[in-house]
Length: 420
Ligand SMILES: Cc1cc2nc3c(=O)[nH]c(=O)nc-3n(C[C@H](O)[C@H](O)[C@H](O)COP(=O)(O)OP(=O)(O)OC[C@H]3O[C@@H](n4cnc5c(N)ncnc54)[C@H](O)[C@@H]3O)c2cc1C
Image (cartoon, rainbow, N blue to C red; front, side, top):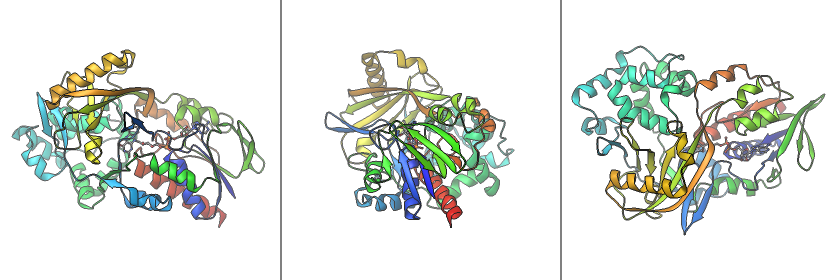
């Protein structure tokens, strides 16, 4: 059996590893000449800058994958730190556990009691938006000041545009099991599922690059797949240089590329084409000094255009570099501003939030960077792939790097079981 994998981001490379580990033939392609997909670590003025994810959780799955690629001992973890929210003129600790919840001044005591009444509310409904679920269950103040910004920040999206059915699928399942969202959350934190934030000295791309090197005989970089065709024996992948016969095809590409690739073999590819992706601006700032913590998000009732700031350099003891995020679904127009203006907005607002000076190291903009998980996701219900064609993506399943690795592993188990 041979599996053809389209995309050498973390999903495609993890899948390559798990298939090879199970002695399944695999051939993996990427359009770009570098491995990692959206995981892109670069150097600017001697600093490591991340254009995609800023950090990952060092879960057992991630450690195992890094060990297979020979880079586990290079993993650097961040010491536990708090997340903050900029609200009513200053940074305030975001409560992610009981003690910070009791001491935070983000909410008044009546607002805290309203929050704690969540187990008495009706379960989240698939047709509701994430904003409706969170404000109904936790109260409007908690939604606007930290639940919305922390959650929406994961997707650079607007929770009032995100159907719970897709965006909260995992959370709703855990809510049913645990009886309430708060208990589900507490069980998760208590179960140690919260592995530390991690990276590598040269950034996150170290992991996909090491995987691509380890499986260099399976991984073809700078060789885009142009079409997927069905044959009596399976499928053919036509790349820019060759034609490959495979039994199964796994597509891990962004949705618009998947729509094009699968047009001849799958139904409902228009819906894939129509999925919204959020734009993003990343402004890298060098600072005189950072406040404590891992970074901050901006509350929805503030007038800042910055969505949030990640204190990357300090988190991994590298330097005083941090990444400010602007744009997203709330503010796509900001991408039209000049680099100079974007730098000015990011530094002025950083100084206002932290009281520290900052200088701009670089500005990067991306038109389509995050799956938005908005109302266009209903279209996914029309997408049907034939037997032997699989979508393993961050828009059909969860986004985070550990989740991508978990899905790759499960799929490898299923595929190898069919050859046994
Ligand atoms: C800005 C940002 C911040 C994030 N922050 C975090 C975070 O802090 N922590 C976390 O865990 N996760 C984070 N995520 C999510 C996580 O990074 C992604 O979900 C994950 O890396 C996606 O990996 P993937 O392999 O599924 O897809 P991708 O990385 O998109 O890889 C798909 C690959 O397909 C290739 N491709 C496209 N067309 C073709 C073709 N025709 N032929 C061959 N190849 C093709 C592309 O070149 C690409 O390499 C973030 C994502 C972004 C964008």
